[in-house]
Length: 164
Image (cartoon, rainbow, N blue to C red; front, side, top):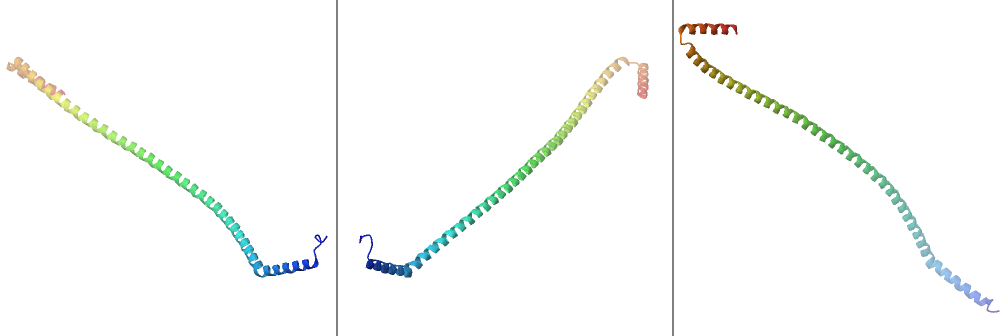
């Protein structure tokens, strides 16, 4: 039974050595161990706070990014709208200018055609009058070989001129 129940001396020396180890640990190891545990707690708490702060900053940055993206989209839409308006204005101005130029070209062509027409008519009239004079001269030479018929013909021409 001695194995199951320890002796008084053994208990005394065990208590003495345990107390001695406990005092040594308290004096030299307990404070540093508690200090390290406290530092570890503080580090963990700081890391958790930093993680929470980083999470809040990420949420804020995400909302800022969304705002920036929305603003960029709005600006893009405005720029595209302005570009379409400028394009439409340029096209309409070009159409108006082309219409004006076409009108000028048509007017110039009409005036050139009118001038050519007048020149052709003048030339035809000149040729007709020249031919008429030649024909009249030949007819008159042949028919007006006498003085009486010349006077009669001149008087009829005078009457025709006065009537017209």
